[in-house]
Amino acid sequence: MSFIPYGRQHITDEDIAAVVEVLKSDYLTQGPAIETFEKALCQETGAQFAVACSNGTTALHLAAIAGGIGPGDRVVVPPITFVASANCARYNGAEILFADIDPATLTMSPLVCRRILEKCAAEGRPVKAVITVDLAGHPCDMQAFALLKKEFGFVWIQDACHSIGASWEDNLGIRWKVGEFPAVDMTVYSFHPVKHITTGEGGMISTHSEALAANMRLHRSHGIMRDPAGFQNPSEAFAADGSANPWYYEMQKLGFNYRITDIQAALGTSQLRRLAENIVKRQAIVAAYQSRLAGLPWLKFPQVADGVSHAYHLAVVQIDFAAAGRTRAEVMNRLKADEIGTQVHYIPIPMMPYYAGTVDSAEIPDSLAYYRQALSLPCFPQMGEAEIERVCSSLKKALA
Ligand SMILES: *Cc1c(COP(=O)(O)O)cnc(C)c1O
Picture (tube, rainbow, N blue to C red):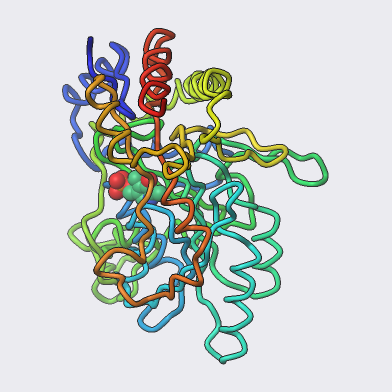
């Protein structure tokens, strides 16, 4: 019996051939495969511009920089997400304000966010940016946040590390893919092996703003400008006849080396071709869990809002462990003894020692309540019928 992890990548012969092709080419990095990957993601998501980079965390950091988040700025983040969603603003010296989740969909509550926006505006220190997180693959309440943005004027960064390929319907019946909705300033993706598509390590930001894309490209590579049209010191940049000097480049910002390689980008382009079919498979796995675990009295599934097509990066269940008379550790260990991996997504960020004291627990009751019940079951496209059955019977046994 082989171990079933909670998530796992899938690499095909085609993926391998795409990587080998780059290995035999002239460029391992800073070559044409990166733009091909960026264009493919735009095509897939409906975004206009995209900037690929070294991972989802650096993608969030580039978005925070382009969004102008700086020292002392206030940035709203949900407590239930991976720590990188908040850290990206801390890198720039911002203050994090945690807005509780909606207990139904597990994404940031627009009502709680509004209270924070109002309070900060009244204090004369308005919120600079809101970072929403599409937890498990469920887009947040996009229309509600679009209205808040209109009213309060913040930078909206959507952490879509779980939700590439998801979509939702607005109240006019128009369907929007994650990455397509123009009210969002920047949408961030990760290509870590547990995510929907992988490049080993990798990330991307999509946007409808050419200026934001240019800013992120600049910071991705040391803040160095190589396009003569963007040079700031003409006397150094250009010869007497007006031609650009062949050696010349300018460092204009304090940037980083956050680049992705062409090797990784080729893998990403190849993986992206299977995104849609893989999401259908993930949805089928969760549907199978829902029908087979339906009878368990202490177990429930998070709700899916009307019109949402969920990307199911994670198959989250919520279990009342106290009522079931089992601790979560006991259940996880029993599943592990049956060669089944589970995980908790996530420990609320304010519980991390680094973030201690940033928020009163009375202000995030739904995040804390969710955390006590959360368990992520295995979910990856290559899971077969027999594996789904193994997970369900092992879980039933552990809770019986
Ligand atoms: C994975 C993830 C990240 C970070 O991406 P990396 O590629 O691992 O750096 C950020 N936010 C969320 C919600 C994630 O799941």
